[in-house]
Image (cartoon, rainbow, N blue to C red):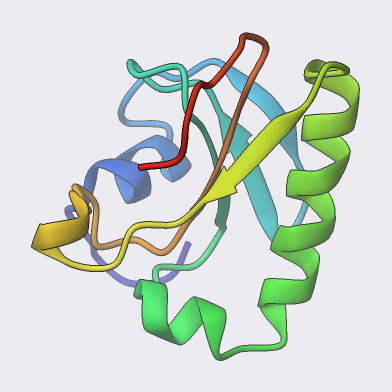
Length: 107
């Protein structure tokens, strides 16, 4: 990671905060979070909009699908929150993998 950043995900990337890392390569890291919504995020700090508008999103999407297929054989959802009304809690762009249990009706 280049430069200084104080977001919680950047703290994990810098190994200043603990995390259970499920997958990592040069571009992407996958961790467990307290909600059991597995975030798949880039190694660099970008916003949700920047991530979704970048070529890196194809890599994040590929890793998310792979994590879903391996970890949630009964099915999974991919979720990305944009803004306060959508309950976005981290500015660092990321995509959640949700599964491993019946997820119920759509929101």
